[in-house]
Image: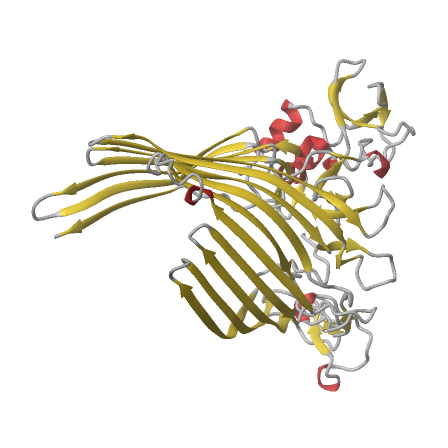
Length: 585
């Protein structure tokens, strides 16, 4: 017999019947005025614009449903009435939320002598997701975001006589952008949520029955009356805009009648008041984590692109495009000055409330923070993985974790090529990511079910399924979740780890660097083969396009390209094939 907790979402043993309705709408009002003027003899152009915009977003959701007792059920409610055929765990919920964004903006353009280009913009954005004033009485709702860009067409000056240079422009820019995505619309004020039926969190704390109390929320699976309460939500009055300050310098180029063209850029971005979840002291708020402006980080990188017509003949043409980018990022400030302080992020499915990523000063944002493992052979000839006592204190605990890789690739590349031969054409697009790492949560969460004493346990009326990669990992790689000891820094096997589970194995094996895999990849995004024809009375094109046909990677999961770097049962990208024919008569 399968037993579920009385207030569990899974306590719909014989099915669930219900509905859910979601509605939303957006309202937007925009107005602007423009002015422009040209000075022909001086070859100068000037234009300016100012505007106002107001946006409003509303969302509403309601749902209702329940489970039903079987006709053969013999349970009765407290008053002795039979429950057979009656609903239980009645789920009824409703919520609504809205937010608004108000903006004032302006832009100025000036172009002189077809050589110098200047653009300046300004935005003032006010978001209802922030308080008008924070705890210090300072403005938190409005953010100011200016920018300026200058371009110099070098090929129109002293290089004008060089016909091989079609374009050579120097660009310099600086600007500020903002981010206000919090996930909630009222994070800065105290809110309360009724523990309605769909939350499964009720308490028999009030006397009375359905007709005597407005807080009556129905009955649980045992027929007991349950009642609603109001739960406080987490809030932070000091939230404000996350701001990113970007400086960049670049060159656009084109040579040989534009047969070769491209650009090269260097950028430096500094993000202040980074928005992220942060741990809070027990009793200081109503959750163990809340959204906050936790610190600063910087990004810098170089981007290079080139496009070329390699062959251009009457019946054969070959185009090629290539780009490469390098990027690095580091956290430069967090809420506390302690060098060991970090903010946990990157939740995983193993255990309860566990994380494998952190924000830490001097490290890349969202770096993996895990235990080190070593594969070793003991005196009996058994090869196993062991967790390393990195600080040498003779025990394994949180102090032995270390920063190991991060999900963001330092190098990315792209390649596009197209061949045209008579009426046929073949185009291929591909991308590469080098140096990105992934936490294989699917493997980590399924490994324990390969253990002999678990795989044959009766789970909800049937045997537990075993993932093939988990089976190969357990018996092929000898990564045994129930047989993980520890070793000293010099590699001396010390045996059972402190903090072991009942089977004598280190209980946090899933938080080890074993599951952080190199997810570098080369992906073929698109292949298109076509044929074009043009006859006297009819013309057209037939083609076949294959999207996402293949990816080359050493990563063991389904997809090496998962946002955030944690692979937790993502929906795999599909390969699609499209065939088409267009005719013109």
